[in-house]
Image 1 (cartoon, one colour):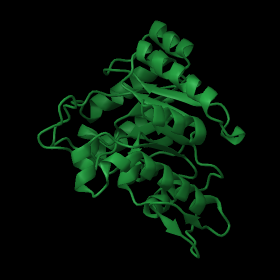
Image 2 (cartoon, rainbow, N blue to C red):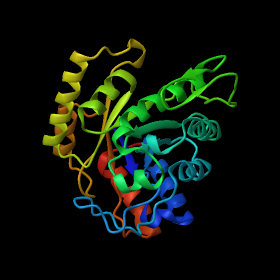
Image 3 (tube, helix red, strand yellow):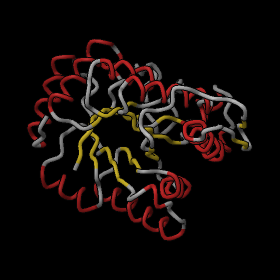
Image 4 (cartoon, rainbow, N blue to C red):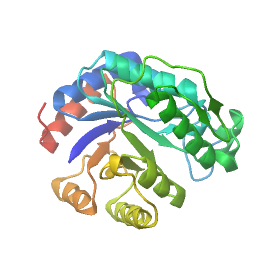
Length: 284
């Protein structure tokens, strides 16, 4: 099993020194990847059932990962997840390609369609159409990254007679799809190299993996995508013990993405990475 850290652009990691220190410590401790969250704005007051503080410190995900790329050399850099409908497709393609170049090919492109209607409304995205927008944007991004003469015509974005250089260093940027709805499972099966479930215990993970398998029976999966890799962030902030890690592995999880506590200062973040790496048996 691989292990990552999530929230490296949140809370105290919204400041340069703590973010850099955690990134370096995580890489030295043997973690495989760093993951960032995404919200352009947060609702004030919070949406019922989503108690995210409106003033929560949250850096832009691509900017934060580019900063972390400069402070590390090996650890992978994942968006966990970018809310794709809120980002203009070709602008995001340029930003992500630039990140992949500057990190020497360490990008994992995690995407979702979002849940926050006030946020969507504030950036001019039709909330009811967000899934269709995301599918269209993803196809457009792939086109501009991979076609010798990029062109694309879809319901929300179209272009031709353009180039966008440099392209990503990786011939194929890994795409990870987040979400626990039937469209998200379909999107993961048909377009993703992986799927990401956030805040899931073992029982909920099993349900999602079952739903993904059922989607795999319903939709054709391109062979070039390979086996769907399952990533999960457990609920809470504790490092799962071996028994729990084994339960996640048995449920089908390939990567556990853990979270440091929001209140941790720079020394505590460094200790968390070191101690978690030791508990998990990681080797740098």
